[in-house]
Amino acid sequence: MEKTVDSNQKKTKSKVVSYAKWGYIFILPFFAIYLIFTLYPQITTIIYSFFDYYELGLDTYGPEFVGFKNYVDLFTLNSNGQMVILNCLWNTIIMWVMGAVVQLLLSLLLALFFTSTRLNIKGAGFFKSVFYMPNLIMASAFAFLFFAVFNTVGPVNQILSAMGIIGDVAEEGIDFIGTYPWSTRSLVAFMNFLMWFGNTTILLMAGIMGIDESLFESARVDGASSTRVFFDITLPLLKPILVYVLITSMIGGLQMFDVPQVLSAGTGNPNKSTKTLVMLLNENLKGNSNYGVSGAIAVVLFIITAVLSILVFKSITKKDDR
Image (tube, rainbow, N blue to C red; front, top):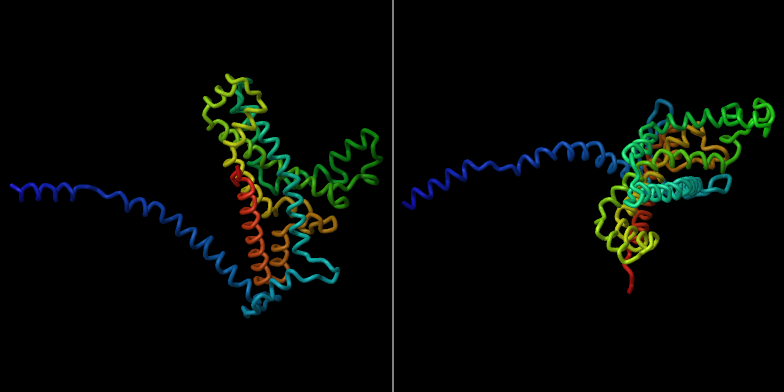
């Protein structure tokens, strides 16, 4: 009798299908693509940053190990007494902050507006689509559009001429892009704001809608004002989403390239005020194809991004000492 029971149990176990292996099979393509197209290039970039490896015409020199020479060269003053990589870092941070602050504040305001149960706004889905539409436009196309609009003979100057603010556009057209650093930086920041505020708004709306409505109802019953509800309930519970939005925005901002590249025709003018770190990396590759220096720039950018992300995360998520 016992042998019969054991044989039945073995037959039952043999019929049980193990689905664990299928999970590994389904995730295998992701890891294969990640290892080949992401991790391997990252490792080789770090390795080549310690080598002299460049092209001059049709000839290739290297790779020749030079240690930290490429990093030392990056932080050495040029003939004008400037440290190019720090100037590019400053430009990148300035343009990101100019766009990100307005983006975050407006997105938070819109998220509160469209998720308010008191206002009960109709057609929220339509407005979500409208807000997100600029994000679907290629950044290069967006930059070309602004380049045409703010050109010396573009529509903006045409309107100013028609209003009598300036004379003939061919002679007195304002060069918003090539002459005034802050106007060019403002245009870059404004374009980044337009492209990403819709995405940020939708993320914040999702975060607010995920908060238990009973908390808001209890606060209203207790007579709490809208301001008190926002600072005591909404903002603390929305903090994880805010941290995610801020860090991802900062990472994207430090990698800023396409908008200033197109708007300044790759020069970073006026006065190199719109030249970013990635533009510096691209310029180095395009000029003499020095893979070692470009790798060093990429590693420095990675370190800066990691340090700033950790600082932002720690400063926002730190616990009260009380």
